[in-house]
Structures are given as structure tokens and as C-alpha cells.
Length: 349
Figure 1 (cartoon, rainbow, N blue to C red):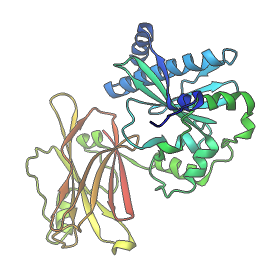
Figure 2: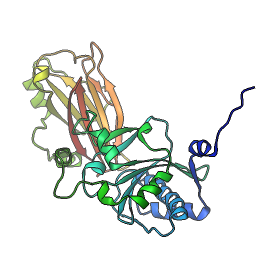
Figure 3: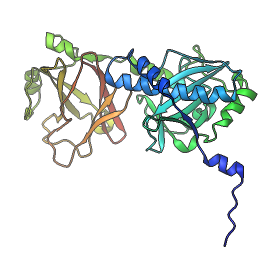
Figure 4: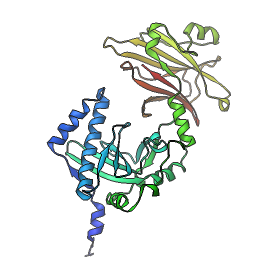
């Protein structure tokens, strides 16, 4: 019989840091979430609050002399705080089914949101637990980001879960033995080119769809009569749609695809529940009967997460997203891509 020996250090590394939550923690998180607007944002605020409570408990028990200050400026599933002079970014998640962790680009490249340490927190509400899954230093994040090819308009970097240090106690050592200057962060005066590209993305023209119902249209959005008259053999499918306002925009994916244009059609109507209902299609133009195979039409949230994706087959004369609704003021992005070529349009309901 083999004598299996595991010393205490090995066992310690196999056990995650679990923090148990109490009833008052859930009450506080629910009260905090009421300040958010919309069900999705309230849930995100609720999770972020539980993640912060759990982390603060864990850290304060081990480093009681360190002062933790939470910032009000948060983005997506992130919570920003200071431990002494160190900036820490908590990344909260309900479950870790994927092998990657999404970190917003502006949480890495901008001075307001970058952090010396990124700490991954898993919130298990039903089990009343918060688990510290690992941490990553800023220089480690940057080393990875410089090695990967990420589209400059994508708002997220996907960081492999394997890069995170699964021993959370190392964060205690770093905060005690290192100085903030040993892990330089971007300053407000020295933003990188990638940061400038992201800012440019945020400032891109946003099409305000609610204004279409008032007869106000941004430049480049054509009436269907204008489009049909200008395009040979162009036909629009209106199957299963009740349309109040329809507009189309010609999309050029560039020289790599011979400057072939596609018509992005947006159909908008007022729903009975005060929401706006949308149907979005992509059609060939210039006399072409079919779209090229593998042309993708994606619906993305404001945070850059893919909500819907449809891809053309060999003889599709158009593709469309499933109809969806949203409240006025909601933002989203439509992306069209073929191979490595990609173009997007930003919208606000």
C-alpha cells in the first residue's frame, strides 16, 4: 500500500479562502442595490457589495491595522478600493464556469480605474459564501495584454484563469512588503495608445433610436425608398414584423473585401409596455443575391458582452437577430464581421 503524504503547506494551497456571510450582510447589500437603476444593475450592485463585504472581512482579520477605503466609481462587475496607498480592483462573479476572466480595457489602461492588484471574488449567494479565487498584479496583467491580439474596439480583455495566483495570502505579503511605486500604474498625463483608442470608441457617434420616432435621423441613415431606388435587385423581407420606423445604413467592411457594401436595417416600434421593440437585419447590396458565408451579425451589451450572434450560411439572402426590447436610454452595439474584418455601430434607445 502506497503511503500518501501531504504536508500542511500542500493542503493549505488546495483549500480556497472561504468567507461566510451573515444575515446583516445580505440586508446591507439589498439596501445598496436599491440605489441602482434597472434590475440587471441592481443585481450587479448586490453581488459587488457582497464581494466587498467578504473581502473586507477576510483582509481585516489578517491585517487589522490596514485601512480599507471603498470608491464610489465602479464599472461593470468591478469594485475599486484602496488598501493604504495601494489600489485594488475586486472582480465579482456568480460562478466560474469559463477558463477566462473578463477585465474591462479601461480598468487596465486608464488612471481612474487601473489597480495595483486585481482580486477575483466568487459570490455563492445560496451557500452564503464568498470565495477569494486569486489575485493578479498590474504588471502581470500588462505582460499578458501586450502579448495578445485584441481588437482596439473591444472593451474587454479575456485573462486566463490560470494566470491568477491562487494563494490569496500573497496579496497580504505584497501589501505589507512592497510599495505602490514598485508596480507603476498609468498616470492621467501618460495614457497609452490603446487607452486613446478606447476613449475614441466611447466618443464615437451613437445613434439615438428614440429620436427616429420623432422624425429625427442621424446622417447616413437612409429611408428604405432611397435605398431600394439606389440598389439593383434589392429586396427587403418584412416577415413577422410590425414596423413603425425603418432606416438602413450602408456598411463597408473595407478594401480587404473589395469594398462590398451591406445594408444594416433597423426596424423600431413602440411596444405597449413603454419599451422600444427592435428588429435588426443585414442584407447584401450592389445586385448581390446572397451574403458571403460566415458573415456575423452580433448584438453586444454596453459592456461588450455578446447577447446574440447570427452567422450567414452559403445561400442566405439576409440574416437577422431575434427581435428584442429595451427601455429608453438603454445602450447597445451592433457588430458586423467577416474573418478578421470588423465594424460596429453604437445605439441608444
